Image 1: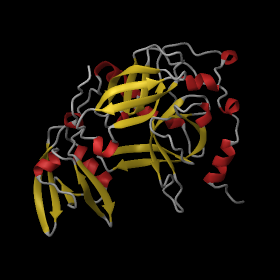
Image 2: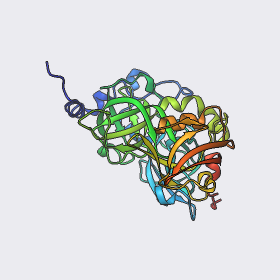
Image 3: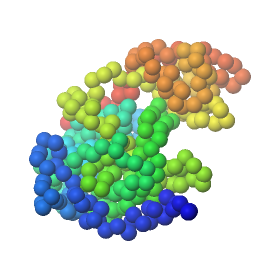
Image 4: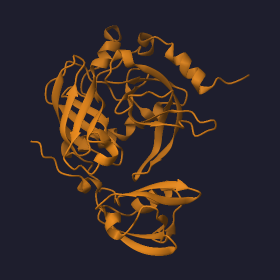
Length: 344
C-alpha cells in the first residue's frame, strides 16, 4: 500500500479544527498548578501568550550586515513574571526592545539572556501581561509525522498546522550546531521566534529558519527549522539568574563556512574578529584543526570545541590560493564581539 507523502499528511493536519488539536489545552508553568480538564483554556487563551518582538540594533552593530538593524518576530510567554522566550538573533546587539501584546499594546521589555550555543533569547515584559504562560513540553517526545501547530504574533488568523518531517542534526555556517533539530513542513512565513505547539498545547520548539530541505531526502521538501525546547530547560535557571549559562563559553573564531565538493570553504570572515586578525580570508579552505583534518562543518566545530573554552589558541591549517598556511587563532566568547548597548 502506498504511503502518504508528508505534504498530503500536512494538508490533512491543516484540516483539523483548532479546539480539537489543542484538547487537552495548554497547562500552566510548573510553578503554577495546572488547570483542570473542565477549565481547559481555549485557542485564544494560547494566543494571548504569543507576543510580537521588535528590536533595533545598536549603532554600527556588527550583526547589522547579516541580521539587519531593525528586527521583528515572535516570542512566547513562559512564566507568570513576564519571562518570554524567543530566537536569539532577534536580540543580538539590540539597543531598543519592545513587545506588542494581543491587545495591540506596545510595551517595554528588557533583555534577560542570549545563548549562542542553543540559539535562544530571553526577554521580560516590564508591564504585566494579560496572558497565561505556555507550559514547556518535551521536544524529545515529539516524533516524526506528529502534527504540530505554529503560533506567531500575527494571531489566530495566522495559525498554521504542519508535520514534524525530520529530527536530525543541523549545522549553521555561523559556528552553530544542533545535535537534533525539529524540521517541519509545509513552511510558514513568520518563523522567527514562532512557538511550535504540540497537541497538548505545550511549547516544544522555537522558530529559527525557513529551509529548502526539511527532510534531507529527495525530492527536497521546503519547511522550517525549530530549536528544541529541551535545550532550554537545563540552562534556564542560569540564564534567568546570570544572563548566560554558567559553564565555560565555547571558543568562537568569527568565520562562516560552506561545504562544497568535500571541502570546507570560508565564505565570510567577521571583520575585526579572531580569525580576521589571524589572517584567515574569505575563499580559504580549512584543512585541519590542531592537525586533525576537517571536511565538514560538523567536524570543524567538534574539533574546535572539544577540550577548549573561549580564549584558547586554536591552530588552523588553511589553504590560501596555492599556499598551505599554519595559523594560530586566539578565540573569544562570541558575546565579546558584540557592540555594547547605548540605551539605558
